[in-house]
Image 1: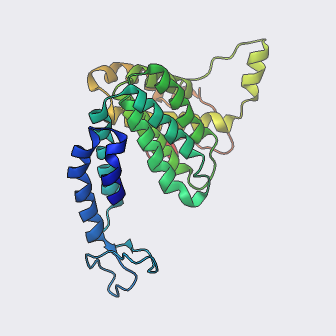
Image 2 (image 1 turned 30 degrees about the horizontal axis):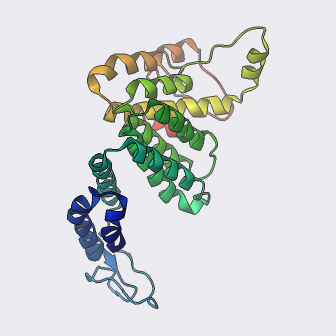
Image 3 (image 1 turned 60 degrees about the horizontal axis):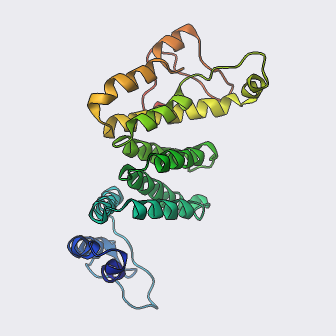
Length: 272
């Protein structure tokens, strides 16, 4: 944090005034909610070890990770607005995407999910539709290619990124979700139709579930006046909709079981 205070002027001339107000507050929270290794009672003593030979401080029981990430994302959001340069946004998006490949260990899921949410936040502030379209595809690949124990957390972060993008690019987000949520139309008697038949049903269902999870975050963040009609049609035509469940027009696999009730699954059920 101290480094960022000094380095801000190297990023952009508009950064130091903002960071000089926000970062000291973050430092204060760190000071009050970290505890040194010699704290016997497990509570914070308001001090942080400065010696290089001392073990690093650990989080106190009072630490609120969700609130901490929210503050960091608010700082990022305001920083992007202060700088106000699309060229800088594009460079930041590229850097964040490159960082994704560094978090391949399952023990680094928390870092990767936060990085994905930051990526969605930067895209929300972008003015480039091409940039948003390309990197939403990158976020989708994180989910489609993941089968680790961290899948649930990563899917939730990716859905949050989609929801943030919907603030500024609702049409692009819903178009992407149509490919996940709506049934694929087969081209009968063609080579492409055969390819679609070969696509694993489990993967189709996996992306359907993710698409519905994304919709739940789009509802939270997206512009409500445009969302009601557009997202309503999308959910109504989903294989998971009430009509398709009743009609039996839904993909079946041996791995996934669908709700026996006549109501669509909730946001939590989409990742169950």
